[in-house]
Length: 269
Image (cartoon, one colour):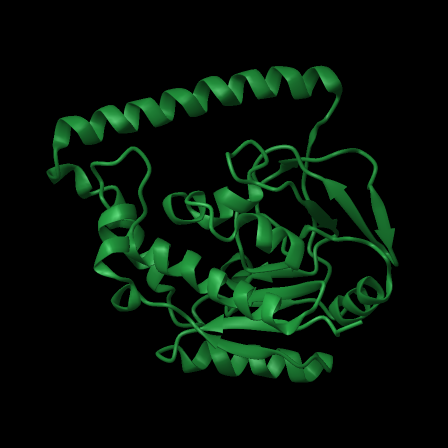
């Protein structure tokens, strides 16, 4: 069996983030391959026109699309490696000391992982009361709804093959596409509980130590695009909010009736 490869996404313009990820991997005895992140300048004019047009019902800011394309770039590396699964990190992930043992046990198991979210989301999320699988001290719970973030996850080559060419990866924020079980694309996923990674900005003691994410600094432009066909943009916004509100209300009613409650997933340092 081919060893499970580990990758992390990093911009050349963020050497501090690269150094911190390399430090963590070395301390944990993990070998990871750096993948140069895609930037908006790397995206073709055709893709910008197709997926970054605020007149469309679904669209992304160029930096959001670049983020998605960075992950797709890594997925192609996983498939090319011949491995059953690969591990993907963004360069602001803080890693648990328990991560190497978990990955080693997962690799030796017969579990067909599909998609496993390793990082914790700051919000409470709806999860089954009992884990589907337990690996060592870590439970893997099925999630119903949205768990934000794409800083750390395990993905199988089988899932990659199924979704890599789908347009939803390019017109929906990546965490929504992957980790919202009610979105069009989501293949479903299991959440580690407790989680073994967390984004640095969720740990106050690390605040300000890493370069600011270009994606976060660009997101305001996503909501300042009303100068482009204002009426259409507003109608699309109302349509999205209405669909989300109605869908969320119906799902909440169903999930409450089935006893699936929200829970906070802790980070295990």
